[in-house]
Structures are given as C-alpha cells and as structure tokens.
Length: 142
Image 1: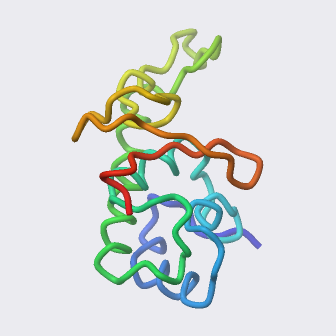
Image 2: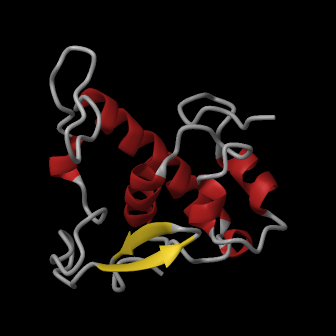
C-alpha cells in the first residue's frame, strides 16, 4: 500500500496529522516512507524540512498542527520548484531532453555542509539518519 502523491489533494495537513499522531520516528524518516507519501526523496525531504523550520530528527508526533501545515506547503513548493527547474542534477544525470536539472543551484541545505545558511549564515550541518545523509541549519530548524 502506497501513500498519496505529495502534490495531490489527499496529501494535506489533516492526513499528515493522522499518520504522524502516534509515530515516534523522525519526521524525515516518516516523509521518506512511501507508505506515508510517495516521491519525497532525500533531497526534497531535507529541503522541505528546512523551509518549514523543522529539524529532520524531530519526532513526527511532536510536530504541531501549524508546523504540519507549513510542512505540507513546503513539500509542495519544493517539488513544484524542482519540477519547474527540470529536477535536481547532482552528478551526470540528464533528463529525457538531454539537459541537466537546475534545481541543484537552488538547494538551501542538501549537500551544503559547512556552507553558510542562506537565511542566517550559520554553517549547515550533516548527520546520518536511516542510512541517509541529513542536512540542516542548527539555528533555523528546531
């Protein structure tokens, strides 16, 4: 059983609240679970959590209603911007038209260890979470 697509009407704050209410797992891990929502990979989870001001290790059940609303909006905006930019090319990927994706130039935290946060200039940090790298700003994300 797969969760809803993040750009669909079924993925909203009410849904997110229902699926996170009793989950002690980290919110980033929950967002990357295709049984919860499909298509939110590592890059986009990191970026959406940054925009919503949520630390990736925060327990899913400890995120309040307002922040859940912000998170749903952030996920949608990040994905829409990535689609408009042709995706995220980090190495040698090219799209079906042979062109690279340009969303990588817009990344706020992903892959930017020790670079200054684009909002507050605090160095971006990284840690391992569920066998994946997580990136965050220790000042902007709580």
